[in-house]
Image 1 (cartoon, rainbow over the protein chains, first blue to last red):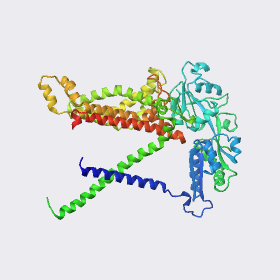
Image 2: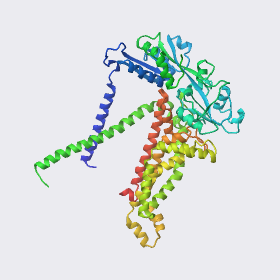
Image 3: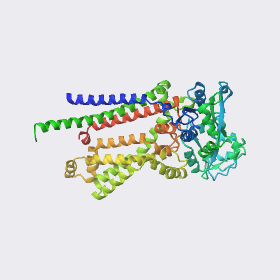
Image 4: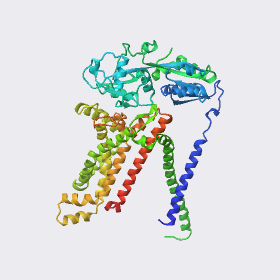
Length: 285
Length: 295
């Protein structure tokens, strides 16, 4: 390698380094969204909603509609998990914390006010040809713990159970772990799929499979098992008789005011609740 | 060629082109540098916090409880890749030999375009076919629930065939005609020439084909996620479900945050090192000699 090519190589490297530096600086200089011009609307300013990843898609759709109706407002939606949502609301890094479980009394003592915006049910599904008519919560837990391995232990036909679960970090898995598993770990050999649709497809394709999906994504491909004798239906979620359900809650530090109040009022309005139903949760009204 | 002003103008133009090319190359270096820095800056903290031995060799992965061990996934990646190569490499090399040495020209060309077709199918389509055809077949005829190492091996094997075939064929075609002619002139049969002269001469190119195929197999994600069942546990049979390193990242990326997200970047880091190591092996092999290495 002669001197000339050495120089050329180092100049290429230097151009690359320079460009990296420019890019990094550009990344740091993001403009502040709240500085957007206002066009005379009554509401303006920005709002951050952070927390549960299960609530996130709902928050995103609601924020989009809200921002379309109120030009000049900016709603940022972030994930992080339910506990992060409460922390963010308490510390003020977010005006609204999103939570997909009940808010503990300890959390309430930090001065947060909770507003339930929707309900979500979790359905335990099996292949449509599975003759099992109903299961107990305890049986489902034992299946997912690996203690019950064959359908004949539950009075069904002989067949090894294919346990289908969601990935770690999924809100649905978190809810299932809390509501059914008493926070115990699912058996490690369980099949893992990373979307409701993939769980449904896997269960629909295997006559020995069992899985869990959000109530809204039930269809004819799979059979939802009644839990402790109660059917997994929207009505039973609303009246509280179907136990595998969780609330979607927005928490604020103190009573919501200003833009936070306007956003929460919008969600509780018939239009907001309609959006929630369209996205697949159960309305609270 | 003209001299004088024309030469000056040309050198201006040339230096402009040279600078543009240097800029493009610089941009490329930057992209690689930024990606590398990003992966390592996100992945190293958790990697060091857990300790590299525990992170790579521990088979307990419970990210929501702060337990990060990707041992099962490292084994999973190796199991799926090796079992895909066991059948796809011999088949691919045999096909390449047939296309380059035995088949008449028009059949060779037809096979060539078929291989290109195979290479052009998106991986999600392979995964979908795997899920709807291969998985139920395994469940019904071999047992288990079908989502398994074997399903991954079958789908991945088909996916690396184009790589193995194309590069091996080029290596075989690059062997100088004189070698084969010399061998035939000495009285060796066509088959003896292929087995004893042409394939050994193309050895380094064929090894490159194998290693590149292996790289593709380790890096493939979408199709693998769809057919392997993704249980984070070391497979104890070819019919058991398995999770690869790439699957681990794509499965949990969506909702991961904090250390969990960091651990996924650490997984990517380990994968990155794996693949860089593979590429180094390729370079070594290519330099190691043989006809194709010296080209």
